[in-house]
Structures are given as C-alpha cells and as structure tokens.
Length: 117
Image 1 (tube, one colour):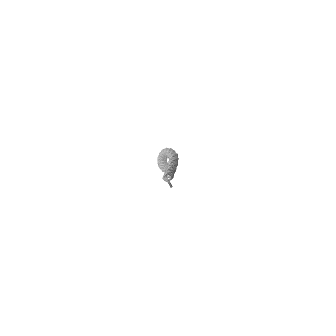
Image 2 (cartoon, one colour; image 1 turned 60 degrees about the horizontal axis):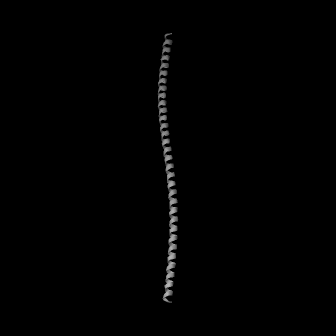
Image 3 (cartoon, one colour; image 1 turned 90 degrees about the vertical axis):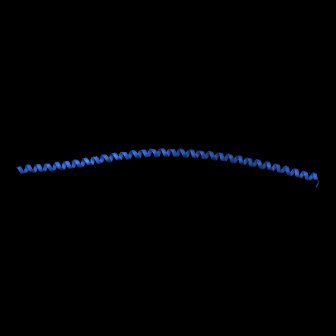
C-alpha cells in the first residue's frame, strides 16, 4: 500500500472519529439538557409539595390553637359550674340544718304547750 493510500485511510479514520466524537458530544449534551429539565421539574414539584405541606401544617397548628382555646374555655366553665354546685350544696345543707333545728324547736315548743295544758 502506498504512502498516499495509507494517508487517505488515516485521514478517513480521523474524519470518522471526529464525526463519532461530535455525535457523542451532541448526544451527551442532549441527555444533559433533558436531565437538567427533568431535575428542574422535580425541584418545582418538591417546592410545591413543601409549600403545600407548610400550609397544611399551619392550618393544623391554627386548628390546634382554636381547640386548645375551646378546651380552656370549657374547663373554666366546668370549674364555674362545680363552684356553683358546691355553693348550692353548701346552701342546701345549711338550709336543711336550719329547717331541722326549726322543726326540733317547734316540736319542743309544742310539747311544752301540750304539757302546760
């Protein structure tokens, strides 16, 4: 094979390698662009999920705060009802004692009147 023929084969081989290298570079660039686009979509979806999660967390915290306030109000009302109940029970017991004493005094008074007759 002559020097020129060898040189032509070498040049063709170099040209084919250059074409393959360019195709490889183009394919790699395309894949990298697609990957970057997919990563951006995923990051946006993640950001949306995080934002929605924060909104739900804030709503739940607000609801818990409202429930805590309602529970506190209910406890205060229960304490007021218990205090009123205790006071009424005490008044009832006092009136019961007073009536018992008055009845005893009436019975004693009637017995004294009856003995005088």
